[in-house]
Image (tube, rainbow, N blue to C red; front, side, top):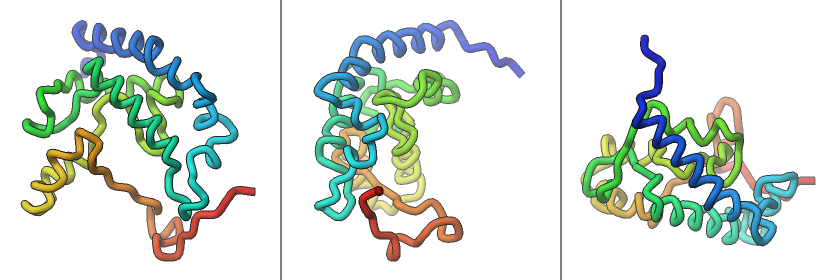
Length: 171
C-alpha cells in the first residue's frame, strides 16, 4: 500500500497550514477568544440561561472561522453540486485529518467536530439517506451553515438519553 501523499495534496496541506497561521490563529487569539479553548471553555461555549445551548458568541466565532475558510477556498465539501457550489475535495482521505495534527483549536475543534476543511458527514448522510423533502430543504442550506444538526448523547448504553439529559453548570 502506498502511504505517500501526492505532491498536489502536499502543496494544498502547506497552503492550509499557512492559512491557519495567517487567518485562524489570530482570530483565536483576538478578543479573548482563547477562552473557548482553555480551562474556561465549558462556560464560554455554553449559554446556561438558555438551558445549556451553545452560546451565541461561540457559534459566531465558528461561523467567522468558516467564513474565512470559505473565502480562502479551504473548505471543500464532500458533496455533489449544487451543494458543493463549485468547491473541490482534494484528497479526502488525507485532508480532513490534516488540521488535527496541529492539535485542537479554532481550525479543528474535536469536541464538536468543527473543522475549516470539508468533513461534512451529516450532509453526506442527508444526501444518501434523507427523504426527498428533507434533501430539498437541507442540502442547499447545509454548506451555507443555514442548517446543521446536533446530538447530545453518543449512545443510550453509555450516556443518558436526550430526554433525561439536562445541562448543568460545571462545579
